[in-house]
Amino acid sequence: MILKAAVDGFNVGSDSIIQGAKLGLLSGNAPTTLDLDALKLHNLLEHDASISRNDFAFGDNLHFNETVFSTLANANPGVDYYNATSAGQVQYARLADSVARNPNITNTLKEFILRSGESALYLSIMGDPLTAVAPKKFVQIFFREERLPIAEGWTRPKTLITPETMGSAEDIIRAASNWTPSQACEDVVLGPGITI
Image 1: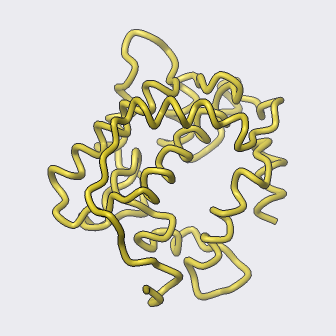
Image 2: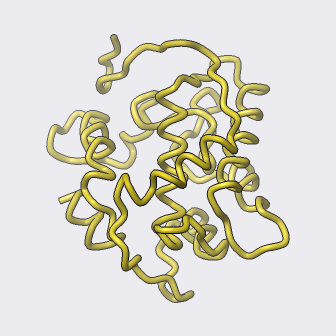
């Protein structure tokens, strides 16, 4: 059902979100349903240095946080769009903030890959999947109001979003984020109460 909803609602191919969907199912105690509250399970899909949520160490890592989001909201000044370069710069700024304020930050290759993929995905869904350019108003409504900006003119992308269409955007995001790890490895979270 999750994979069908991704294609029907956003034109996101299953190969783009299958791993996230599988991990999402591990986040709760019900093996066949995905609970949005359970997705806040730290270090499974949820990660520090989010562009719209607090770090786990600061309390509420589930709900939208305007202060955290202001980094993205104010990015790419002078134009009305976000792109892969601005997304990478936002990642850099958010990570720097988390490193400075969160002594328990988790920042391994896994989190870096998640953050970069998520950024390419929101640019692709809210904008053009082939250029990774998205109107600021669409992105801001999507995050702040947690709805699709249909009334404002957003439409489902015509191009199927796949790992291939997001690949060049992810490369640009990664380069612009100037990422360095804070640690080499971490505990692996497999579900509620299951960490190895």
